[in-house]
Image 1 (tube, rainbow over the protein chains, first blue to last red):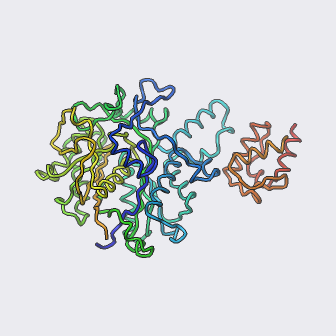
Image 2: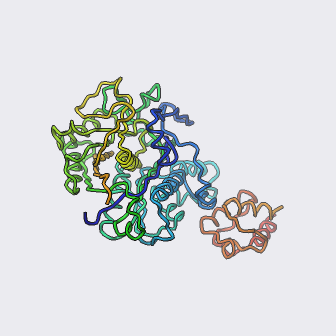
Length: 415
Length: 72
């Protein structure tokens, strides 16, 4: 394959664990990672359960000086990126930092910093606002802080597209590598939505489950008992590189997967009729397959967005059935984030990372709640905690507010 | 006393170099623009004086102590 882009490292910081290895092990332990969310001043507007990150040790990786400048999502980004680079065995001193990019998907930036800045503004006055706010509250801050942490200087971008942000960041990085703009990239997404200020915005979309009575019912897309999504914080990053980069550092054995085709569409209207949204979502899937050297039959795993509303779930499932027809039944479907929560701008990155690990391990994460629920679609979801199955190609689907649909095909094959 | 407070303010940024009275905030300790603004805000909170960060950029720790003494 010409200009193939390879995945050589996976890194994560999230509710299931603070490294990709720990996260994968936690995900397959059968435990539910939704924990009570207790934030002041959010009665009735915050989900009762969320996927929360605990036990980070940033001082091990980030200098005190840089740590002082960072919002929480930047810290998670740096830690997850380091985890991915260690997995890929990247020796940055042996690589050209000017030929490495940083691509980050994020939706809401460091809003805990913004909220604190607003509090200081209205209590102590503008001169007392933390000057670091100027460079840590907005979505591109993580990209900047990662650049400072690793001294990476190549072509880089931050993508903001709701729940599609992470997937788009990966796709745009792959395009930049294919086009020869850069040789390698650290790509993924980060989100810290568990803040009263951020939650007040997320709540306006009406997708949050505000009434769950236990963690196991907090996030159940694709079944009749659905009642909205549960949020989570975290960061997931991948190391992508060209064949040239792999050859240069003699690292072909590090290949975990290859990035194939990508499709991105938009409804072009805020609340399109379902049939139009289905058509656009299906178009994104067809574009992704059309730009892949992968036949649709080879795709064995469908990783879904899972907004957990009847409309959004219905659009996803209908679009998949429209594209794959009767062969849909032969594919496994999954939505691993139901165990730990939806990280919004990082969700696509988590989904790609987990799809890569699932193909590498030959084990697909399942929907543990399926046995006690009534499914209202024709997809073949993995039941239980997981299922051992060899899959050579996965399709990852992310959607977003305003009718965004994005799809990416990832293959398990190496060189 | 004032020196210890100013030193603590600079150390809190994460500066690990040795801080002495002759240390210049920009030339010796390499504080960036945001860090100079942080010191400016911290000095305002601690001593009630306001020194603009562009002025602090030219100062040594001794000059900061002198500015605090003049305000007292």
